[in-house]
Image (cartoon, rainbow over all chains, first blue to last red; front, side):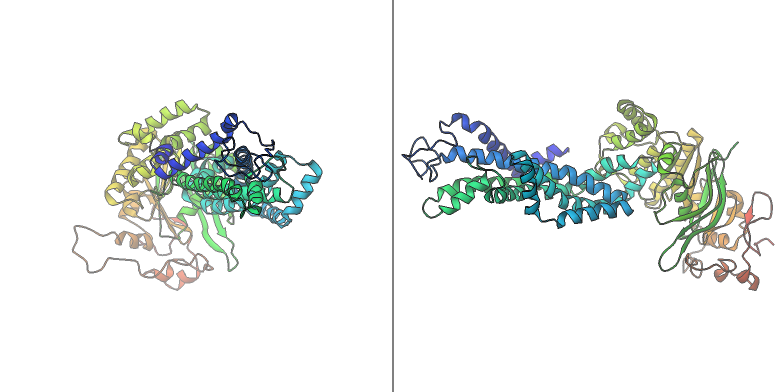
Amino acid sequence: MSAAERLRSNPGAVCALAIIVALISLALVGPLFNPNNIESLDWAHVAAEPGVIGAHWFGTDRLGRDLFARTLEGTRVSLAVGLAASAISLGVGISYGAVAGYVGGRTDHLMMRFIEVLSGLPLIFFVIFLTVIFGRSQYLLFLTIGAVGWLTMARIVRGQTLSIRQREFIEAAVASGAGSARIIFKHVIPNLLGPVIVYATLTVPQIILFESFLSFLGLGVQEPHSSLGTLIAEGAGEMEAAPWILVVPGSFLALLLLCMNILGDGLRDALDVKER
Amino acid sequence: MTPALTIEKLAVQFPQRTGTIFAVREASLSVQAAECVGIVGESGSGKTQIFMAAMGLLAAAARTDGSVRFEGREILGSPPAELNRIRGSKLTMVFQDPMTSLTPHLRIGIQLAEVLVSHSQMSWHDAERAALRILERVRVPEPKRRLRQYPHELSGGMRQRVMIGMSLLCEPSLLIADEPTTALDVTVQAHIIDLFRAMREELRMAIVLISHDLGVVAGLADRIIVMYGGRVVESGRARHILQRAEHPYTAGLLKCIPDLKGPRLERMPSLAGQAPSPCSIERGCAFAARCPRADARCRVERPLLREFPAAAHQVACHFPLSS
């Protein structure tokens, strides 16, 4: 059975994938059907409950802005930040960790010390520093979060590589005349996919939460734009009077994270050839 | 004609904090083109490390001395990029455990084709066709289906056939087989030995067969080299070694082969005592402590390898059996 077939035979993972796809398409296509945009204020209906006023399906916030429009934009931004930053941290972290672990010796030593120096830097200071230099933008947010996220990934990958390097099939590959680059990218990295995918599915939610934290401090997404994190922060303040302002973006986030975790688990099972 | 492999005064050491491990103390041997040489010895006799040194597969901490020439060219200590041109193509190796020597997430066909693509700039398409032919050649049933399978879907014997096929892809001039049948059960073992014999005749390549099992070596080798304590103690034509061993250690090994036809023994015959520690400082003959023929001289003076009783038969013993 191929990996895709194995994934298809896992009902949980298929459901999770379907929900993620549905949420993404809703976030992309939904605004076309919504007469309200994220900025327009409806003074007649401030903090309206969902479903009561026909035009505002998910209700409005305390400024009378349409919650449906804002939640969809938040989902878009959060997903974009989560996926882009994870992609950066995956790409950099895997290559860096695999090279350090496979080459070993002094190279490994230097590369790991560099990581330790970086992870010693205070994160917030680092982000403020970059924001001051380059100004605020979403792309910078991707880069800064990614630039910080790869450190742990590199460590995990290096540890796994150290143990894979001892395996006999690596020795056999060396004996068959394969060069280091070929061995790292063809024989080592694919064997890391299990732990890496599990860690990546944990990283996406972490990054989404970190983004909302930065936005809360005024370093990330700014009004009138929204992310799920900023919406939740906003809703938390109105929790008693208007719970839906918290519940709507909160359930989007929870559903998204739950599905990503289930999908990640399913992917790990499907991609791991040995453990069946 | 240049020999396929010439090893001269090779020493392999592993310096450690607690003292140096002398894996190979000093070994010289040569393998002629199209010849099959069996290397026999206990665990720790250094038989594997000699060839790991030749392949450039020693652990990073290893120190080597001496010379290893492959088809006349010095290869000991060559940089990996240079070694990669010959290993896997002209000089190949089959490992002991086929269960762990194939990369688990790659299909058999890809693993085989990869060797050809990297060594002969063949296209993937041609390489897969060559992979199919080699599987037929090493008698893998249903070779077409195997190419699409993963290693875990194959039995141990089948995987060893794939490993052998992989080592034959580029038509090597020397194949080193390190205990190729130890991890397999006895009937599969016999098939694999048959396969080696057939391949050797079809491809006219030299084979080095490393084993602790004289029975495996006896069926295949033209020449047998016996190792003990990191040195060669006896070498000669297979027939001579098996019938008229001169070194007491070789004779002891031969006695340990159980005989199905003989009387049923209460205990399996075995060599008394233990192999010498590779960490120890040598004094005299390494086998003296276990040797029934040893006397005071053996304990102080190390016997040198000399021709006895005739040319082409060498033994390192002060008191060979026929003296």
